[in-house]
Length: 235
Ligand SMILES: C[S@@+](CC[C@H](N)C(=O)[O-])C[C@H]1O[C@@H](n2cnc3c(N)ncnc32)[C@H](O)[C@@H]1O
Image (cartoon, rainbow, N blue to C red; front, side, top):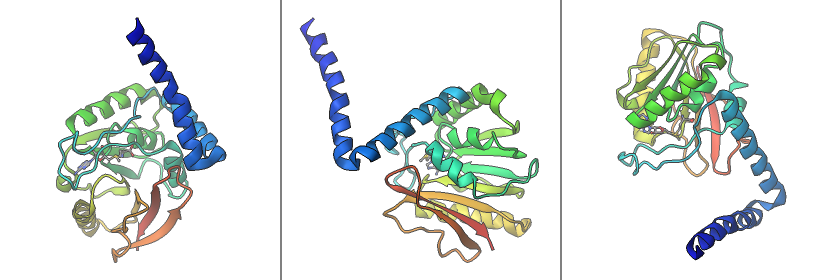
């Protein structure tokens, strides 16, 4: 059929076009690095048995403009961040605010946390995260993992929480509310707490002036063209 032929050809013709666009934007080495990362991400998903790739806008999720859409943390970025935080086995509690399809939750649960919690506003993304967790069960070291379908603004932070992860989930007003909730939990139970926070290069960092946090690490080598990642700890 002529139409099918045209469709097939146009689909295949996208590959060299995308490659040429990538060469123009990132150069040959940048493109090869990117292809390598895509291959390694594919292998990580296969090994864990999860499906977390893709991107969904806030509009498609029917969110207000302060809540951003879905995009998973690059595997290399999560690995890099975790090299900068200490974990006390069977004591520490990790929360991913805006856990989406659960990539960071699954990865966190491969460490010996006492509990890992994902908080996600979208019901359908929460369900995908739960499915992914079920598929990855045999690979996890933490078996106390929950996904709360909730707006982060209303989530009461457990007073044992020691690690917070936020991969550009929402805008400053929500970040401020979530920080207040974290602060409330610290008032009840003063403790060391780390916040791993990723945000676009072009935006000011709302955590930088928070008096009870200190910037410990800035990861410039993040596996992305547009994001940076900062690690804060309580003073
Ligand atoms: C950039 S994705 C990060 C996904 C995941 N943390 C990861 O690193 O793979 C941001 C996620 O935050 C969720 N989100 C946005 N606003 C939210 C809110 N107010 N409360 C809870 N989740 C929210 C989105 O639905 C999306 O899944």
